[in-house]
Image 1 (cartoon, one colour):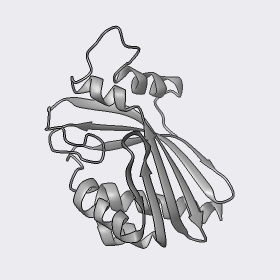
Image 2: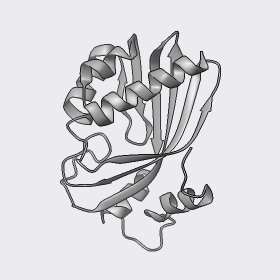
Image 3: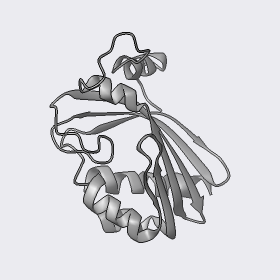
Image 4: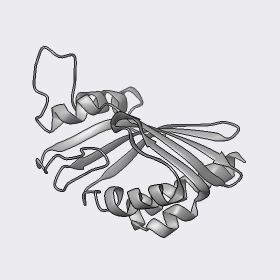
Length: 167
């Protein structure tokens, strides 16, 4: 099961971030998927809602320079956890991470954790976590120096802690 989950998850991510193929992304999921972008409480349960999210918000909201650097992966009985660094320049509207915020053309680099649960050989849910305050700081919308919020330094520190080699 571990190899199947890893292969399905890698295919899912490739279809989202590389191929930008909604149908192929959805083909990796069960008939009753759930997607929860925890920091912004987006999406929810249901195939149509998830498909709509991928086709109208996520895939069209991926800047051309978006990249992912894997940090670690943990695979258990029916669940996989990926820790990664996601980087992009905020050149387009990005309702999946910066809803309602016009492009600022600022560079963003953040740690992100994805928890993927499987039923058989299909993805049944994704819970995605990141530090939204760090994103807002990096695009210039959160600039109070008294707040305990860091920007891209957190991603750089994480990469340095593992030697920048990734998982």
